[in-house]
Amino acid sequence: MNHPAMDDDAAMMLDTVREFARDRVLPGVIERDREEHFDRQLVRELGELDLLGGINPSEYGGIGLSHVTYSALLQEMSRVDHLMGLVMSFPSGLGGSGLLQFGTEEQKQQYLTPLCRGEILISAGVTEPASGTAVADMQTVCRRDGDEYVIDGAKTWISLINVCDYLLTFATLEKGAGRNSICAFLIPRDAPGLTLKPFKNKLGFRAVATGEVFLDGVRVPAENRIGEEGQGYGVAMSAVETGRLGVASRALGLAQDCLDRSVSYARERIVQGQEIGRFQLVQSMITDMVVGIDGARAATYDYARQRDLGERARQEASLAKMHASDVAMMASTHAVQIHGAYGTHEEYHVARHFRDAKVFQIVEGQNQLHRAMVAEYALGYRG
Ligand SMILES: Cc1cc2nc3c(=O)[nH]c(=O)nc-3n(C[C@H](O)[C@H](O)[C@H](O)COP(=O)(O)OP(=O)(O)OC[C@H]3O[C@@H](n4cnc5c(N)ncnc54)[C@H](O)[C@@H]3O)c2cc1C
Image: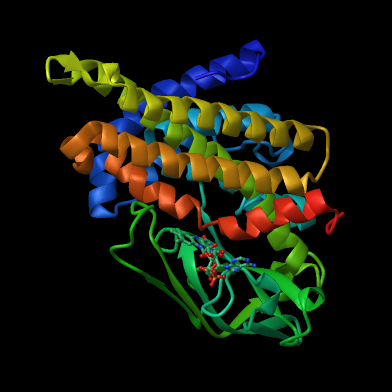
């Protein structure tokens, strides 16, 4: 896999990720997918290796990586298991980005530092039953009551809910009042009135439980609010924008594994007396993968570089997320085809990639949304 030139520290970290992925993550990846099992021990080990801190600064348990190096580490892990890539991305993305940007000093010490060390897990609950894409239309409400807030509503399709210690979630002070009335809260999983109900048997991302969250008069101290009243939408967007670099990088790792496995298989499998790699129509699928991955990687690193320059780069974020997840879908479809019947069996890994790739096109903003945003920027409808 081609990454940009890196300094010695980053190159060493990349080697550590490769070794950990090969020795600790790969052996159980099929079973975790089949059993829908999340291995918390792997998270602790990633924490001990200092691989969770990502782009967060060292005073909060981070390793202060550049976005480019962060993306490279996620790609390498995701060649083996993009859900461990998700875990590595959480402290810098969905779980930690809002805390870093909007949290108080005390909140960062209390939550971000242990998150970066693998000591706690935080779920991020944005999506609601009636509003996935349209985040500002949320129906979950909060009201201030003395030193507390009372929260009522529901979230759905929330990841990690079987293992999280806290839920970062969002509620509006007034239904229909739009983004400026949204607040963000960090709620302990054992808070009275909070019910977490994982789904079973979803298409992909099976080793990470995803499910429903019910908030029934949940009381949280005001000090658990992240940011000011009305800044909750900003907290959510900060999480998803860095999250999009995570998704693009993970999708790329998955696509790369599809290519690598397809190349090996095409050179081994003999049909009608020749390696199937000699058939031009198989070569055409390999070409699609090489070209797609190359372009998506360029778009992803372009976005990462913009972030390293301190730019918000929303157009680049959409382009990278959409392109990398579309390429992952294409590459995994071709990979299953090249493997023939074997491609449909879990032992060959590409069937899992095929199921997971579809989910990548939906999470962190479904791809129609990103497609529209890319066009709107190009047309000058968005500034
Ligand atoms: C495995 C998994 C894990 C997830 N984890 C989390 C999580 O941890 N936290 C969280 O908050 N959410 C999570 N989600 C939810 C995910 O972010 C939402 O599913 C996503 O934002 C899309 O929302 P929706 O499903 O409500 O789709 P909808 O908004 O109902 O859209 C449905 C479809 O309509 C079309 N569409 C919608 N709007 C437009 C538009 N403007 N232009 C063109 N077409 C459009 C698209 O094709 C879209 O796919 C997860 C989802 C899955 C599947």
